[in-house]
Image (cartoon, rainbow, N blue to C red; front, side, top):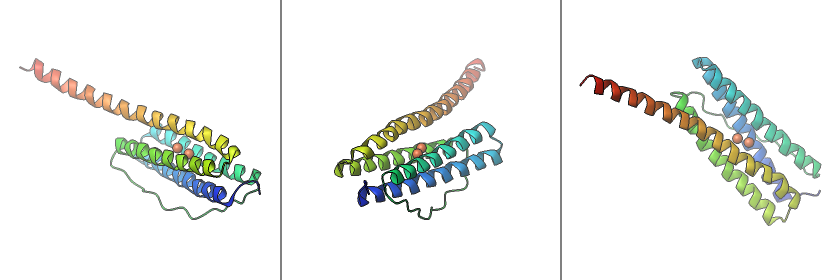
Length: 161
Ligand SMILES: [Fe+2]
Ligand SMILES: [Fe+2]
């Protein structure tokens, strides 16, 4: 085994977290579809596939290092939301939590002086920057639209003076 037990266990925990993320985004995708938001639904479906791919990728890495992959039960995810904006607010909060988990995984790789794991985890550190940015961009679009709507009411009142 070229991977320490501690590093292996940390990866197994992260694999479970990625699978939980995948379930969360699949559930969000299905909720969006039910609400009639097709674009949001397909965006979330893609995220669900990506998270599952992260779990598969990590499992392959553990196996290639001669470690053992042990899947655990996955907690249930939330199943309904108030509106689209709430979904993205929660998505950003979730991705920030995942960023913390990835950073902790990197800490374990540092403690174990495991260079292969450090290298492997580096792309997930980059990935989290990208994912947080993408969700923030969507939330910014919501804010801009709200400002636009408020400006519209303002100009209507101005004309009615
Ligand atoms: Fe992920
Ligand atoms: Fe993610």
